[in-house]
Image 1 (tube, rainbow, N blue to C red):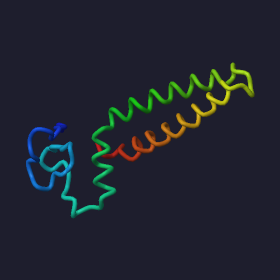
Image 2: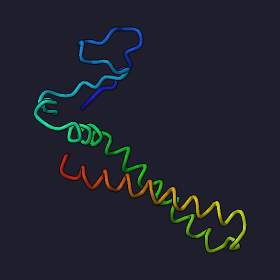
Image 3: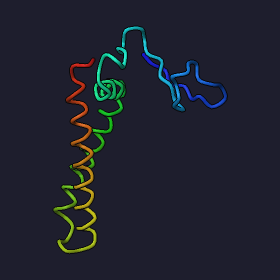
Image 4: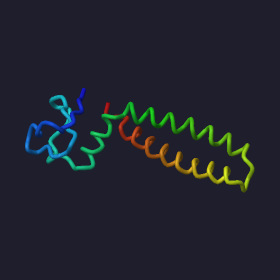
Length: 109
């Protein structure tokens, strides 16, 4: 579907490629940038990584469940309790962000 090439030894294929990584999409997969906004093209590029984002979502969800179990076991007021709470906050953010991307990409595939 796409290939990721590092442009380290060779110059970019076109003058518009100025990033260290370049994507080569199948013809018609992405529209011209002038026809759509930058946010739409970013979301479309992000949706190409949908399987990896799903794996991230599942891992964070499992870690969240394990943290909830450990929250019930750890003594309230201890240092471990604070660490578990911080883990729950961080994992909640990751679940929210990855879940939002998966929700927005549901019609892209």
